[in-house]
Image (tube, rainbow, N blue to C red; front, side, top):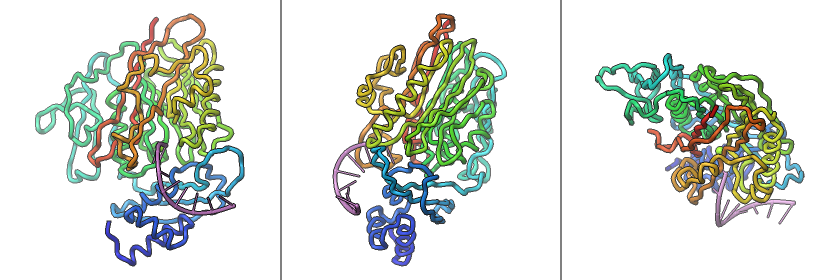
Length: 429
DNA sequence: CCGAATTCG
Ligand SMILES: [Mg+2]
């Protein structure tokens, strides 16, 4: 990107303000990133973590991008606390809140419950009127309707872009007594294309109708969008500042009995464990999600958090089955180092045969959302489960696992830097 | 949120 000298100076000043770099250093950094402010900031701060409450100083910067979306960036330099967390993250954090009109998100994506049992085709009604690139009004109907063009369209992850049309029977919403669950780190920390990405994520929910959804890296605008468009679900969030986790429960199938948030005492990234107790088809089910400490450098803290959550699974009532689904940021070695999974605790991917198809949930060799040049992949997103310890049915059995969010959107991005994990379970009586 | 480079005490 070419920049005028005065524009360069302005950006340099801004960048120096935000980063506390000297002006020449700031200019150098910006040059390194082709004067792309977002990229330069991302690269400089590496990763947004840490506690906003520990902030020492605060600076407000308004950035108007070329796409005219106004972003409010609060930068907080944390005190260089000499704790022994041994976690080599930056002592600096960027809190980003989107100050954009609600209208930038699509409005009328409404997830509705099917009126009848059986293979009801899910149909998308695309009303692309005067503002094709702005807001596309989307209504998901229960019954097939004809478009003006006289053709039937079935919703896909990309449906709102009108790219894909698939067979009407590809995702029948049949009740076979099983449970469908989605876990996805939606990368709310990246604001690029977030409205489109949010729509794609909600379309994935509309497509697969999971009974449970576990999200990580939810930010307020995404939560609001989600709440608006998943009216058939209970929404429980794991926090309300910065980014946090969330669990959706399909109201028609799961009762929300209670929920609790377990803090990780030494997290520096405001991470915690969200637990929801539900009852589904006669089974007491304890659902958990978390976004364990990020980055390789924080392996020790991450292992502490893993032990904490495994202990919580262990301590769940005997009569209750437990499923954890979340972004663990784990490397295999970190699990074996703490002695592997405890007795009766299983990793769903392993139980289903360790398929290479679903191994990597974060893969920069395919997913270029983050613009990393080095290609690497990890199985960050995992599902752990423990059966109820008494022998009374129903019994929860893993059936299948697949990845979602693997197709590029119109904006060329993927919905997130993580793939979503879509898991099916059988309930055997 | 990688890996390698850079910076700093
Ligand atoms: Mg992330």
